[in-house]
Length: 413
Image (cartoon, rainbow, N blue to C red; front, top):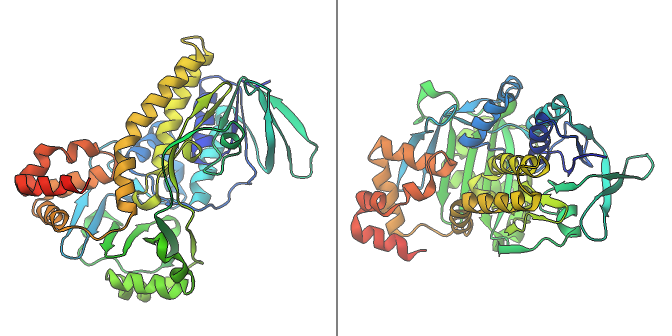
């Protein structure tokens, strides 16, 4: 008998397991994968997420595995371009580790905290006719087993077995608007306009019909990500490499990319819905992509999984520790998660449409480019170290583009 069973051992599941085990709870976490193993990912751990890794005492392991910190990024929309430095929130940096690195570090941390981790374990269903009381499943090649706990947490992604079994309600849901593809490159020269003293930097590009990101990742590689509108998926997949390179050419990266070499195959998907799901019910809860999913264009998924792991761990510890009823604690988790996620969720949905910026938006970008402090604040808003509502407040926007510019920007919403 466990206090908590967690289905899914990647970033949301292992982080939640680690935090609960550190509080003395008996935790079982299962996953059908074995670690280290890869998975589709934005890679990005935004600044608040890096601060959490540091606070949890595991950032050193991520960096020791060859993942660089990124302290600045170039934002380029064609007519307007500028470089911002990440705000001094915790480490004042973000990073983009390979999932073979990050997931293994967190699985090891969960085990070190006292959680039991079973890899290669397939969950066949949940126990309980009313409240969920456990799981049934089996390790590969092993006998079928049942395990019981007063709470089962689904941390098993957008196709969550737990969310499906309990029929978790979705709301504010949006169908896929974009496709995402990425790959890795070795020996790519840095951008000539990026500061030399900050170490490896990120790059963010927008052009009509596409968005591109380039981020230094583990083992000295550069990960390049691109998004196209979902309506063009058929066109893209007919020539993945050619379309990928032509997109890099369109944003001005092609020459530098061709100076290096592609290190791995292309990965990608059109399966990019967005939703909130009801994250708790009798005997169950959801965390990470199982409960909240954004389009990857803003790279928030891993950082949000970390944030919600902390929120959920606090709620579960309160509920099982008798500080307040578990259902009340989980309702507080639900409200806190939605309140924290809503501004970036809506902002991400607008970007995921990949529509060309309007004149008022280009005027805003040009205004941001005129002052370093504004460039830094804007980059902070993208990564979550500066509240998005703070940067997009009427006072800030009017200062940057005037009252008419503010009115034109608000008309887009």
